[in-house]
Length: 317
Image 1: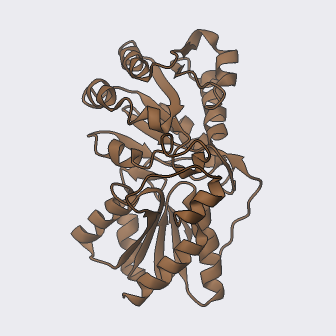
Image 2: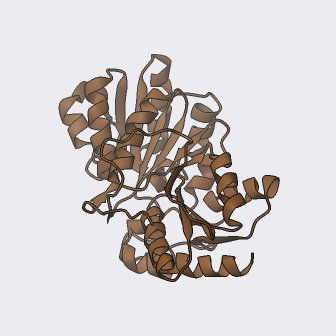
């Protein structure tokens, strides 16, 4: 079985910051807007090197989205930055009307997503954002798994013309994907080939899926692991091809099981190849205050939960 090495824990928000800094050097049309969270979004270097293209909007997220939409009319490529909760729920009307409906080339970049935001608690831990954003017509939704992939995704979305939601996180997590990778929007990545079940994971849960596959392999269970970094547009064919081989699937996400990756996969399966499926996700609940590790354990968002789901779904085949 193919294995992956953690080259050192890094936070995915720093991958965004590094990608944005490189874009500032290579694309004069890229501009950045922040809602009073420059340090948290790792936008410091962009501001330092390109002050004329950086706009501190303050705690006025709705205004930030409106400004960004207007900037696209002049050919700029605006990247907005704030917490995922404030990037979506707080400004949903502005995103729907000024960005999605108008098909504006705005890149909505959201940090501190999910329960791994940690001690700030439920008011900041949004677990509904993927559902909110994927329902908007024309909106691309991306949830990369580590520092390197987040950096690559940040650079790739600048070349895509249209609205994008880029989701990443606060904590340091294993960094295991190639350093100089090419990020292809909508193209799932097969990490491990397997025959007994398919594990479809996104974001922080990809590494947990790899750890689960390793443990399952030691028990004689062959798990196929696929990194679904793009939730919309979803790589339907990759899912169908894998499930046709394995006969069952586990979906893994740091998000509510209502409206997230799992529901998108269920739609693909019901339309093409009805298959037993188990969900590793939060179950219609808000989060609470705690360390990221404590919360991932409490809400069943780790390798142990994936192993349990894998055995359950295999028994349903």
